[in-house]
Amino acid sequence: QVQLVESGGGLVHTGGSLALSCAASGSFFSINAIDTMGWYRQPPGRQRELVASITRGGSTIYADSVKGRFTISRDRAKNTVSLQMNSLKREDTAVYYCNAAVFGSRYWGQGTQVTVSS
Image 1 (cartoon, rainbow, N blue to C red):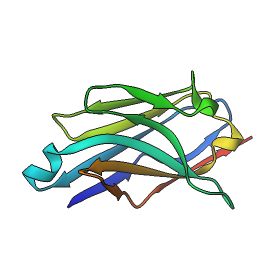
Image 2: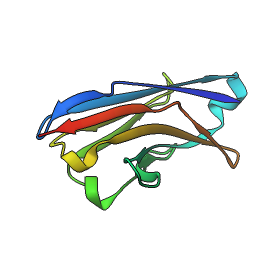
Image 3: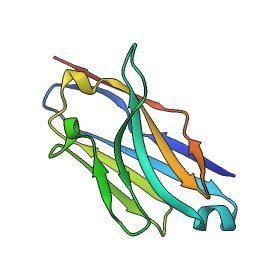
């Protein structure tokens, strides 16, 4: 079992920046078994979508809509994954969720709201 807690959401104007962080906790075995971690988001009235992910080895994937603006990073020693969001747009408004994959199971955080206003 892995618990994920996000932080860092909030309200920002278009063109601004926000940094999200997610801390994973759980048993020693589970924490060390975490494979890919990522960030998903669910805009109002839409389905949840992948924003960015990062593997144990540091390989990253980004949604086309955030390439060049968002950066995902991971600190395996601290069991954290972060998302630096720059040049934010109104369409980035969503609830952002942290995700971790452990032996084929997926764990989710409670979500943090990001609102971008003009």
